[in-house]
Image (tube, rainbow, N blue to C red; front, side, top):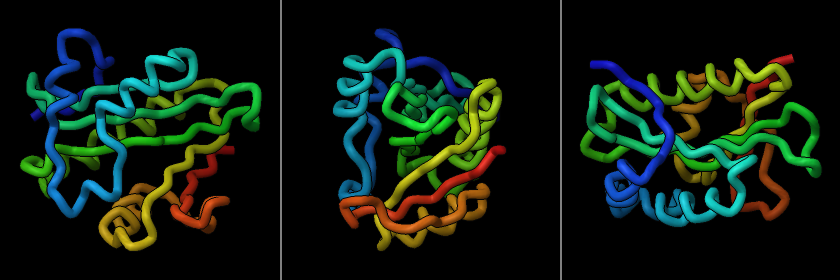
Length: 151
């Protein structure tokens, strides 16, 4: 099995849009539709990726590059999901590894941040295993922030 990240295009938009989460996961993540719409208004800074296993779309990821209001080199992963039918197979780990490598390859990259709901023990464990270190709650007190420092 080969995992790859590819741009969201007219050819895969509908498939990405229809990827299901389990009902108990829906409170943890904005919909793929919302994320893709949001990114369409910010194409310079919001980067959407379809996660492929061979030629099948199995997930979605969106990362954000810094704009003029962010510290230089400050990247954020805003969305990451894998179809619930493909979870637990190591595919999400491989996909997130590819996203981290893509961000690390950017010459200005200094840190990568991700957030998750504090009650989501699976996310906490998964992101920690990928090198993210918790740094506390966000300004609204709703999400845990975790970061990988690159420099």
